[in-house]
Image (cartoon, rainbow over all chains, first blue to last red; front, side, top):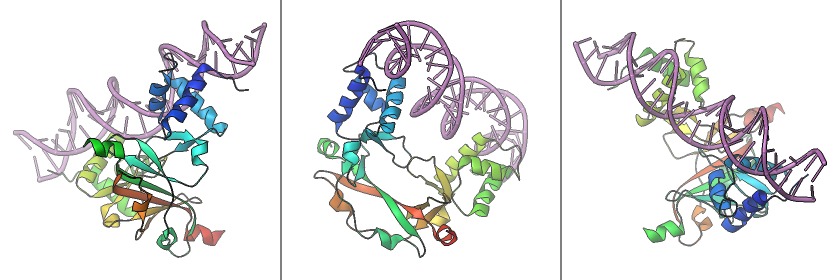
Length: 127
Length: 127
DNA sequence: CTAGTTGCAAAGCATTTGCCTGTGG
DNA sequence: CCACAGGCAAATGCTTTGCAACTAG
């Protein structure tokens, strides 16, 4: 069964407050403002349970460790933007056409990932 | 400068023989058939130098550790296809239009990655 | 010769797990 | 109450690094 512990509440609210994919350390930092004793191991264990419960969804970018976002944010098709300045990842709305034209003959496409890199609005403003 | 050591020769020939992206452990296993004393640390150091020398190129897919392939196989802008049946990774020619339309206001794009998933021609035929 | 290379072992990191205490229901 | 949850620390697994011995040129 699932207990409504203060740790889990803090982690869930960190996701809600952020509105973007977070990594374990980011989650720890944010949730510690509510529960200072929170341990990183607990974050990992809680993330694992939340994934099993389909409360969150992993966001994996090439060459980087996984981030996680609320399942509600993943219920529609979307992609991600990775800021090279602050390392944050943002959700992007929409998609593109013409992916099929990349396929060689005989290949079947069942899904795809698109990741854009650059600088986010916050970082661009401060430059 | 660069020395033509037997270790490096073995690693390079492993890439040539494989003709596909290889991970550090795969490289170690293959190259040890020529140089049994080869150490994994040497593989990592050699890979780093080969990348600096632009002899190889890292291939990073979401949620997986890096593989590497000869630069000659990737001298142009391209993307990847990952077969869910055999786990092989293929290069894809070309790219798509309209990535800019995904950007929120204030965001600047400097690069992108596209990964298509599905089944390759070889696997599709055998099903 | 002798500076770049290697092997080995230890150090780093990120993530996981064991174990015992704490606590939600 | 008491089984699940959490804190802490040790254990992993992968990658990197320090260092002394080795070797290509």
